[in-house]
Image (tube, rainbow, N blue to C red; front, top):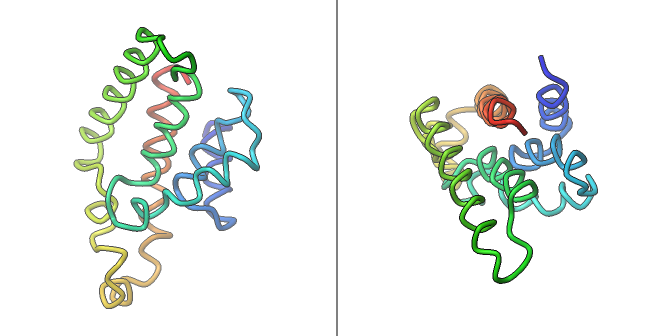
Length: 143
């Protein structure tokens, strides 16, 4: 198991969401303070609390931005490169997991309290696999 994957899983087990776990395991490599990274990614867990794009993917897209993101207004080449790598990541993640949506990965919509009650512990079972897929894919892509 890679050091980044171990860190991401440790972050998740300690109480951070999928997005925080992925971003938190890569942030230092790109000069971002870990506390700031964890705070920034805080609202992206559970598909932005809406069951939409999986938090592990959101964290990975933030990592992509740290490496390739545009920071000069008219740097179209950086913007295009970041978009290209982001699309490549998301398409491959979807190929591997079958979806990019949190509610489909979990098997229920996190906003539905009755559904959540039917699947106790489901996030602890499913989310580490989503985190693992994101971290491994990032590593395969050279992050």
